[in-house]
Length: 58
Length: 232
Image (cartoon, rainbow over all chains, first blue to last red; front, side, top):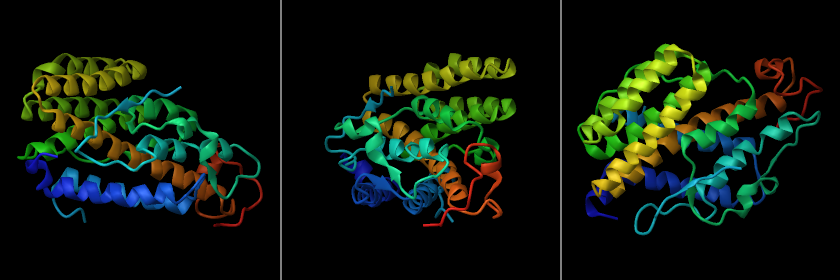
């Protein structure tokens, strides 16, 4: 990854998001529960707020 | 059959081994059970073709929403984001936001909100200009407006999809491969947010009593208003 992207705060946050979602899916085996779906929703919602607002997403 | 667009991830974003395509299909996997009389408490991933997808794939919004057509008529308007986005100063956020706005366009199409669709078409043009690919989407932006006025929703969807492809193509020509990927990622993020919200709400309505406050989706006919199912 180019250093200019590696240093970007938003890119870092997205990478963190992806690291969180990965296990949620992997650990689910062949099934995913609604609460995990909800977790993925909250994670992506927070990052999308950051993308739109540029702020802290709150 | 869905056809995802593979991303060359070497050295860039490390996607989970199962791939995000799998995530999306996993979520969509909940659709079929929602039609059943006795909805399962879990969603079977193995029932979906994503299990065979070994490659890391990010579907373009049109593919996501083509599958979402099977959802029937959830409250798409409730998923729409309000307000107009400001063009960021940094290109990374602009690229992510561009993908995000294009995905929002698909939501607006599902909601059949012509004014919102036209506004999003203009936003696509503004954001594209900020990252030097305006020329590639001028015609698309105009077509989005024209087809929204005609309420040609299928046509609008094609134009939003084309805008995404054209923007990515133009960025690749400029050797902005990383930003090009961010456009796709921005679209995926917004699409996933919306999908998980809809699927989550529908699943919740299936797992709760018809007399609860979450029965509006059940009343839509997408989820059985049968006997109460024990919540997870």
